[in-house]
Length: 281
Image (cartoon, rainbow, N blue to C red):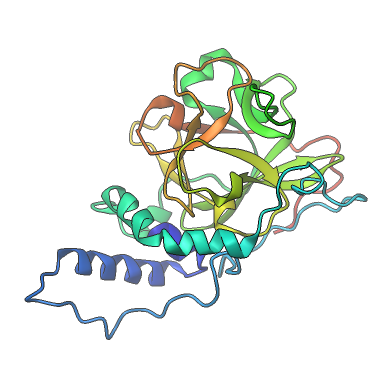
């Protein structure tokens, strides 16, 4: 519920109201129905159309070329926003049920926002289970060679590309942007807004869609963050799990397990030398 409300652009007070209403409904009985007269109004428009609300937008750096992350130019099927949002709305009850176990008993939205979360800026994204192997998340190709499109994979941190920029949208929700000197700015995107297992991640033109937004949940042991795609409520991890420590291992969407391959660290990085100006909030 926190993730969906944040994606709709609600502020922290409204998010907290939605969470409290959901919990009231969860504990109510048939004999004691919960009055919904005071429920907050649903957000206007679709999740794909909703903005981040009061949080300042981050403008991408100017570039002389049109961003080339679009699926059409990569030969991959075009993502149809309406179809993707239909899938999200149809699956909403399942997604909320999947997330309810995690959200129950967690701090309210105002307490969640006070926890240590990354600020807007440049980072190296690293799978926490492979930190000793100097592996970071960057661009790679599908090892099966089924396609030749760019994907998010783990690779050597030395010379990792593109440059990663985190853009906070509020309530722990972020865009993970890739900035490339030739391709422009792209957002990591769950393939086709799939809700199931093993959906891969690839860069695409940023559209503010729910499958381009990720809820960062601090891991209790302090090893990093679980990354939950807002549209599905699942978690990002390695395609073949924590046993796949090899460079080139693809990132994919899975049911949350709490295993080490689903925990990521964000280490601050310098502004890219090729970039003339910083993104402006």
